[in-house]
Amino acid sequence: MPELPVVVIGAGPQGLAAAAHLVERGEDVVVVERGTAAASAVSEWGHVRLFSAWPELTDAAARRLLEPTGWSTPASGFPTGAQWVSDYLAPLADALGERVRYRTTVTGVARQGRDKVVDAGRKSQPFVVHTVDTDGIESRILARAVVDASGTWGLPNPAGADGFPAVGERAASDLISYRIPDDVSELAGSHVVVVGAGHSATHTVLRLSELARRSPGTRVTWLLRRGSAANVFGGGSGDELPERAALGSRARKVIDEGVVELVTGFRVAEMRPAGSGLTVIAEDGREVSDVGQVFALTGFRPDTGILRELRIDLDPALEALAGIAAEIDPNIHSCGSVSATGARELAQPELGLFIVGAKSYGRAPTFLALTGYEQVRSIAAHLAGDHEAAARKELTLPDTGVCGGSGDFGEADAASCCAAPTVLRIGTIPSTPPEPERSLTLETS
Image 1 (cartoon, rainbow, N blue to C red):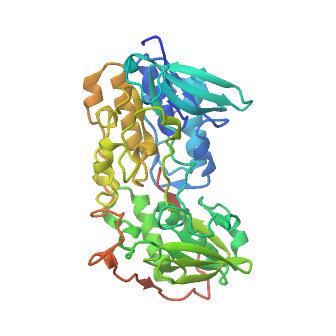
Image 2 (image 1 turned 30 degrees about the vertical axis):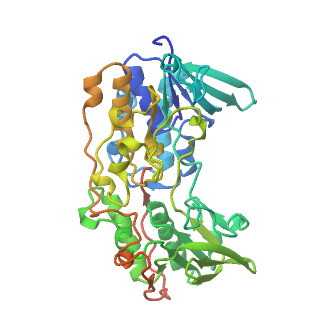
Image 3 (image 1 turned 45 degrees about the vertical axis):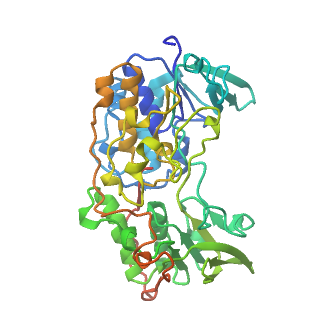
């Protein structure tokens, strides 16, 4: 089906990079984006500063496409999400021109005339990408291959420790946010709880700690499911991304100074209304009371609903692609120990379908932009018939400095899965607020 285009779902960092590689190889490509502009998901966290520097945030083929337009690669620094969009992703989308279709939502992908069950003639049929625009007009795009780079941003995990919303979590939605906050000044004087152990949670804790220092009546409680905070603070001097290391170091500092109360082994079971706020209750019965706001930052999960009529192979635990799951299992690996992944590892039973970017990692939290750029480079080479280039590994990821995995319940659970959780309470909030921390950073995911 050489006359048909490759359809890329999502005009985010990996989707646009995939298109750039395909264009460079002379392939016809259509990028379908539900937002009104490029990288609409990134724009939603535009206030957050990334911990990857500019050299790790741009793709080689994208740079080659942009340079004739007069664009130049930012040499150094750590952009915010908004700067990443304005200084790189939006110009890249402009360079791709009419290949990018905005305000178009993919509702499903299938084989033409074949549902998931039918074997006969399946491989000889093109893909059909079903779409609907903002006016409700439905369309179908025939494709010889599909690259799903739609990400996971739209499906955050709940606060409930068992993967479902805690009892009362839905009813308390006006007091719960699943996004990193920007302006937190309206929370001054209240008790704020952060649930989660990743970089998003760490960033939020640091932002709230600045508020606590300015407004001593503000309380910040950080709830971790795992029994130890050891890996939460990162790899320190062993981390090859210095801003990622600094994020962990600053988090450790606010705990040591008593600005933030850290509670470990707390697995949320219920959020119970109490006056104008909430009481957060753990599986073991412990309670955190008088809570005015909760930030549930427990990661994301992929939505594979649009692929339900295709044959895909996902790991049963991570919901990541089966071909890379063993390499990215957060119970075993940090992101520095994960090998680069290409077309061979990302291949699906449905030939010509590729899932890339954060969505390929499922629930694993270790994805970096560099990984996605290597994925789409290899896939574009494969689709163009350059199998030698597709098989090459052109990326070595920066080490995290963290030994072993981060997905377990920590040292307190090492002897037994039923070991008692621990509570860490250090110091008190200083009466004289020190100077605010410098700007905060976040993982590129």
